[in-house]
Amino acid sequence: MVAGRQYNVEMRIKATLAGGTVPLYSNVLQIKITPYLDFAVEPPGTAGNNYNDGNLWVIGDCFGAPNWTNPLPSPQDVNHKFTKIDVLHYELTINFASGGGYKMIQTQGVWGTQYHAMTAGAALSGEFEKRDADPQFASPGAGRYKIEVNFQTGKYKLTAQ
Image (tube, rainbow, N blue to C red; front, side):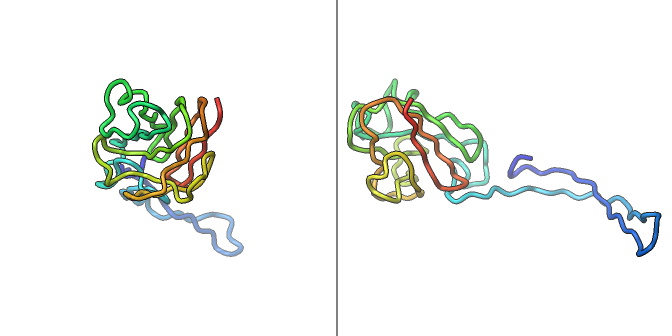
């Protein structure tokens, strides 16, 4: 099931009396349900319950040029963009050029809806939140890393590639 989408469901009740061998069934009930999205940190694009519009990019001095330029110029607007696995999970494999840090943004040119680390210096894993604040995510140092972001748990993880 997809969060935010309405589904038609049919159900009925089965009952068996004590010592009875033949079950009794109610009439079939038809109802509409809309599952909700459960998350620790609000995912990109879900503010208006539009669960399909989320985008996520990384910006920072740890990638070299363009450093903290927001919006990202070409080609960083493409190669700094996460792949959306589903509404709650995003991944990006990217080259880190140096130390320093980065933040995640969901709208090009906007800092107000950014994501930042909860603990300064936690380069390979930790918790994050959505807020225009510091600390930035710490760079793991030069190298190629896969960044995995889980909005259901509010945690991120980097793995050397």
